Length: 445
Image (cartoon, rainbow, N blue to C red; front, top):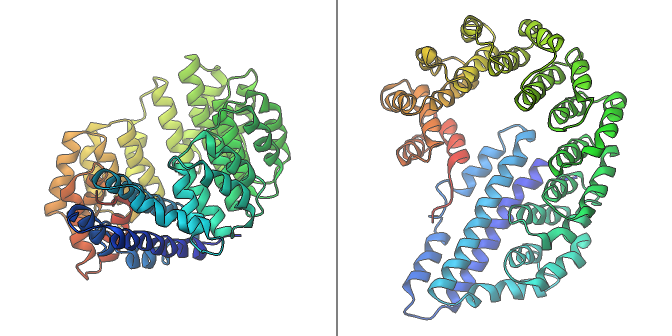
């Protein structure tokens, strides 16, 4: 099974593939085409990405393994988007064959280690032969190449990729199967549902969770009985919590009874998900049974901060807005997760009267709280952005960085520049600035 180290190494592999294609284009272009040459040279000099690959790798090696997958996927897709843009640019300024030919040669060489990357890229354009070869040879690729293929094709989704995704659903690596499930959730062909439904009984929790989410997204109301059965039989709190969320998305009689039971479940995640699922039901139906509302009110005093916050949010959306004092109490709680949950509610419910409280929390001792407070300020529109801009320039070092991150989420170039400056400063906050920049940075165009 793929692990975080193998996924991280794929970035190095893909970077090498990109450089290889770029060099091939340089060797082919004729004199007198400076635009293409400049574009390719900028890429080879590393100017296309604001954060060098070695810093990306360094960052990935320090974060929890469970967080690596999504970061690698994001960066892989950014790198792939750069290649796709390069194809379009070369085609517009010269001839697409300049960049297609080296990939075709790689695809036709069965011994080439970059063959899967070339096939996946060509499949994203009008190369049916690349799709056919991928379907034929998919099982013989390494687990890393099978996974990265699914990552690339899922982003560039097309019905013509369905045969590849169907093969991947039977893969021996759970990470590959997970990616294929998420890709197949977008398929319109009836054949998509049955193979995903069978995966509800996989021994891999990761696969089961993905299958539940995909079937709900597809709109398979007929799986309700299976979900009820799985909820009763599984030992996994995560599976039960995901099913609780699914009950909120499935429009069938009886789901209210299931959610009523979830409200008294022993696991906090199940209770929290049930509350938010019932919020969705209320939004659709306009009302909920009295006993359910009373139970949600009781859960405002739950021992878990997430359950508390979700109850306040759900009740607020139902018109019960007398919760301000409870939110204020959360903002000054000794528990950092409660403070974070309170900050989240301030933004979600647009509590302008608590804007100053959020500003103060951007200097909290906890990074989680600082980040949530800064993001919550964005919900206040221009007035919130003005607070963040002031903190970006005149706040403490912690406030400057977290404010730059929040403002950067709005694609503000000054915030990105602030993070780039901090990431290269060599200060104790440089690593934090780099990690935030990686979440915001997009390839240059």
